[in-house]
Length: 132
Image (cartoon, rainbow, N blue to C red; front, side, top):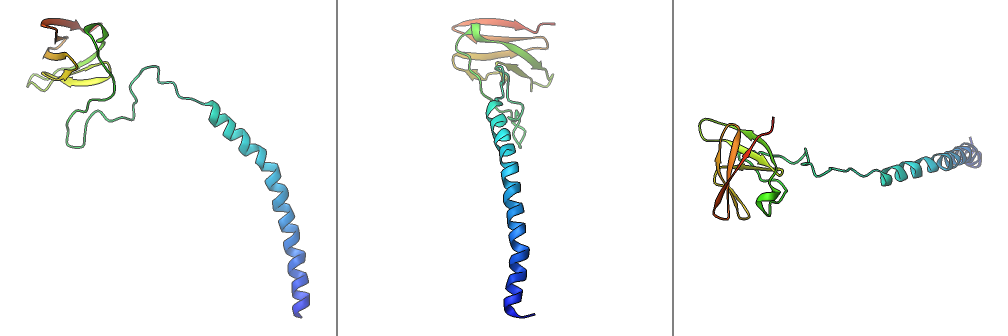
């Protein structure tokens, strides 16, 4: 085949492929816009719940304090107690994992029992029981 004939053959093959790809891109472009719009409309609402992807325990086995705040004793929400007879109990309140003697602001976890926790706030003990 001569070089001129080869150029003609290549252009005969490439041009239709180019146009087909161009037409396909115009056909699928609106689909990518719909996907982007759907993604922009979706917003995850956590409803003040703890993010399940934030670890509560570090790699070395220590409990982490996640997000949350407690400004007064009225803000305390007791969510759970993990009781350990050997003194390694923890309490979950306001999305925070705390052990005895931990402090959050002016509130201190004084004692953790099987079904209740005693908090110390402004010179007084406050008892919170688990709801059944």
